[in-house]
Length: 155
Length: 155
DNA sequence: ATAATTAAAGTCAATATTAGTCAAAGAATT
DNA sequence: AATTCTTTGACTAATATTGACTTTAATTAT
Image (tube, rainbow over all chains, first blue to last red; front, side, top):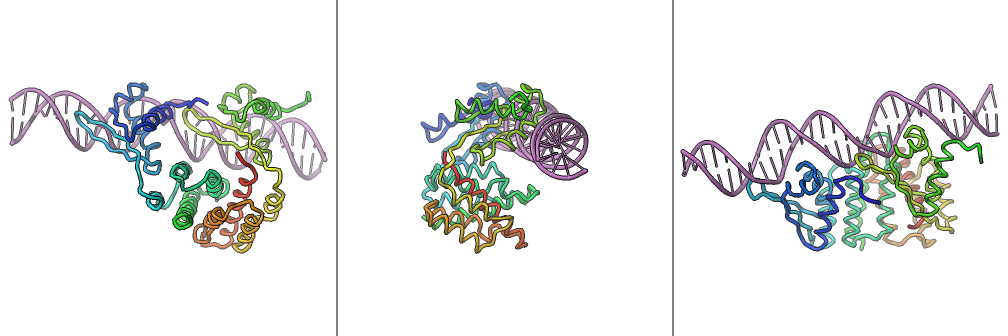
């Protein structure tokens, strides 16, 4: 069950720190050195695993004394969570992003585990695929927004 | 049992592991190499022998460190209602029929009120509309069947 | 002060590493 | 003979890794 790729390991490393801290401030090259990867891979990990959909905000500074800070975001209430998730969904929604969103809903106690799986079933690729991956992503976005909107007043 | 084909052997190999474990995580090319078949034959085995009807769910990831994970799930025994509903849905499903189905699920205590509204949101006309009412009914059928299949097991 | 240098992080496209799809060919069964 | 199941491989898609080049900020030199 070991995470096989290095990006997953880096993700796990950072999330372990974030389990005990509200934020983590790193020097990109240090983390890159720790895992023996090129520095830009840290950007890759952040861009794919620490997005706002995931519940993180990232800020950084270049130049001497530069850093990257990852912060767990605290949305004030459920409506804020839903609104920001709806905002983050544009016209299209990839499978990966949809999974992140559902995970965030669960982490924020907005849906139960059963509801997680019902939603994932509703946007399952095999269900909504129409032989056109662009349309699939559009359909996924539509369904997800519809569900999120429903959750805004169905509590 | 001497005249098994290779797909049967691969199936048996994986099911032997699953006899002792809840799940098995493989690298497609490794298993293909083990049995000296092309990698895509692993997909064939999975698609024909590890379906949800058989009580398995499969999830995978591509790219570096990619994998295929097969998980055993516990199918609920008392799911005649689900099976007959799935059978009854053909290729297409009207809005009206979908509402009847959701009502039936609720009446049989298979879903909660909240789940009713999530499902209705998922198949909402405005969400899945494609300017083509035939396609809309097809999409509605696909989504509903996907959800019903998900309700057939628990993890 | 201003310019030059240095020390970071960011971007983006190329390459690598997996798994998925699909249709054709071959084998087995009816 | 026809149908269904299995095997194969060419092509596609997703994800990860790498590195050259760019941008920004701080520090040092003029």
